[in-house]
Image 1 (cartoon, rainbow, N blue to C red):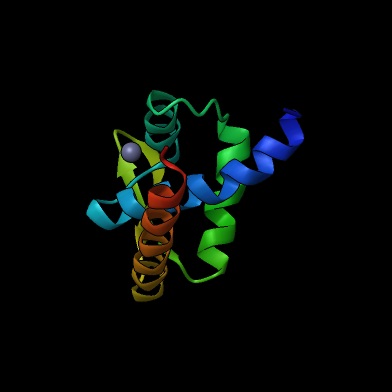
Image 2 (cartoon, rainbow, N blue to C red; image 1 turned 30 degrees about the vertical axis):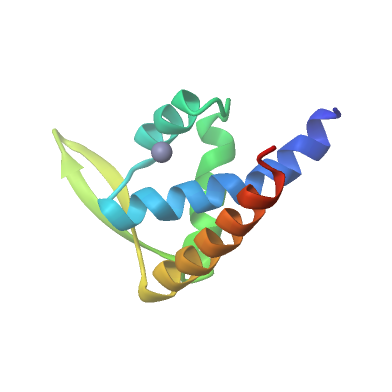
Length: 102
Ligand SMILES: [Zn+2]
């Protein structure tokens, strides 16, 4: 399938993935890139960072800057709205999974 079509489709999966982890603990870009890679998503930080920024603008994530060994690192955690969106997305994903798994 065409790369562009797949990328558009996976964008939603990636955002759900981000919400899932950012709810569990604060995440930062490089960690998330690695996590997604382990799940088979080959995404660069140049692609991921704008996604994180957009999700922050949409009020799904909140950013906190921490000084880690002299470097400022941006950590993201879900907001109430982000958690609500995650719940809704989880239900929808589960419903879809049941439908298409076979
Ligand atoms: Zn994961």
